[in-house]
Amino acid sequence: GESVGLHLPTLSVQEGDNSIINCAYSNSASDYFIWYKQESGKGPQFIIDIRSNMDKRQGQRVTVLLNKTVKHLSLQIAATQPGDSAVYFCAETRTGTASKLTFGTGTRLQVTL
Amino acid sequence: ETGVTQSPTHLIKTRGQQVTLRCSSQSGHNTVSWYQQALGQGPQFIFQYYREEENGRGNFPPRFSGLQFPNYSSELNVNALELDDSALYLCASRLRQANPEAFFGQGTRLTVV
Image 1 (spheres, each protein chain N blue to C red):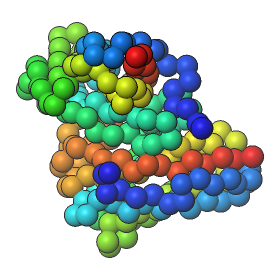
Image 2 (image 1 turned 120 degrees about the vertical axis):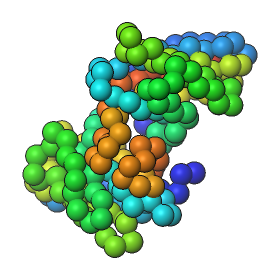
Image 3 (image 1 turned 180 degrees about the horizontal axis):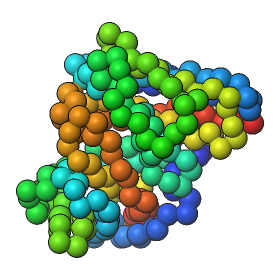
């Protein structure tokens, strides 16, 4: 089948370990950030979001950290599972009437058994 | 599942032809955006529709056009297809224009030969 992200940076993690995926964003005016997971042949799936007035937000097995000083986001996945294998994108936007999302380059996460 | 549905899932067109892609937004979502995702890259914003009018556009030529209908469903039309238009086309819906959370459909894979 088709593959998303043939030439993307790849992070290889053993099942059960924690994963950390990093992202640098470009627009200092961005005030809302989303992490998406994209499996081959599918659209991006919303994982977790964070607003610029926060520096950490936790979900189920996932945590997003935001460092506005250096314009950096990270996604931490606890106890990584084979089903977590996918391409992960961060996206930034400035909330308003035409809130287009600007996506990062993506990271392929490979979970090994 | 996000509730955003796109059709068709795949299609092949010849250079110079025209194509129409369709999207049904998640129930109650009145804002629809379209993105183009080339292989190995993140999605790129094409345009956004709210209340049947385009109210935001990315760096795409006028041969990319769209429509939004009273039921909030949307179409993306591309005229004079070029080989570089081959990509995954994604539709994203948002509850309201002011809500930044965007939920994507599974995409339409367009191949131009």
